[in-house]
Image (cartoon, rainbow over all chains, first blue to last red; front, top):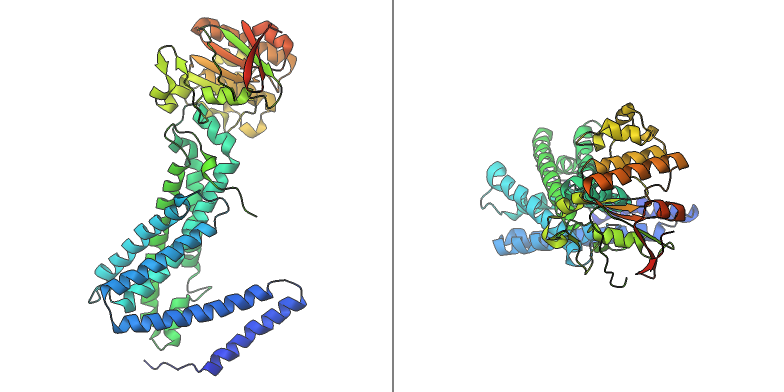
Length: 267
Length: 188
């Protein structure tokens, strides 16, 4: 593999694009120039930091360190799921629903892939474990936050229907079933679209990165397929678990719809 | 809402009137166990808190003013089917069961929603303005059907209405809701 090393000048040239875009935003009064610059700066700093962390981690592949980094990743993803909700659960549930479901699905899928598919030694080898977990987590996070957001908004809008169904003696599971199904479907759409368009409309980022870094295309493709299936599995199961937990939490022990367990709608 | 102590006998109809926001709907919802509350409701010797919620709501059934539908066809909402005689009594054709909900008028929906609940054979009915969207003729039909149901099944009716004439026609006793409290009032 021959990797073409990028110089700071190369990156600076790419950064010019961001500056131009910010200039355009200023000119057209889009009002996003500051956000654009800060997010670009943030991603630069964050990526360099994780690069350093990974370098250290790869040199000392102790399972505890791998677990610690994985824990941090999942906590941040859980927070991200929470802040993206328009109406989120009050208290620990707001953070807990998404985080727990991501933990269940992402960890299971990653560990399964490491043990059964890739078969690295040791199985927690950080070169494989961390990037895989990161990719699965990133996508699962999207699915779960879309699904939860749809569920809570749907339940709020359809409150009269749900309560009528309860008043007719239906169980909470039946009363919320339409909203739950719709929420899970919405959470799964992005990954389904990504899989259908992959290779024709878009070359997935991971594969592109590998090819740019010198991996033969067919090898890169195989990894990409593997990663996509893992992402679909993680997202799908994660969304099902999260939406189901959340749907249960919307009702109390007397099967009453408890929208007071959600925070007021933001923006 | 203040503590409310109210008994409705089997086969009795009790009416409640009162200004908007006085707590009439809240009372019905609490009896149907749709909102958290600190009270207890009894159906005969059975306490609400000791009966599984879906079972309770089938025997102590709430019918709201704005009928709600979750499926396209009327029939999808009638798990046990519907008595043709009841449809006729409410001035609806037998084919109404096969209608699409979106094609029904508000009044047709309200009558169908009432039948949907009656088909479950509740022992007590909590009626929140059940004739609110109906013309005079349909109102009369609903009053007659509910009267028959009450007598034949010895059902208890708790009926919220704004119509003094209606209260006079259907109520055994009537109350006025004021600031979350029930005040006894003359029928009408």
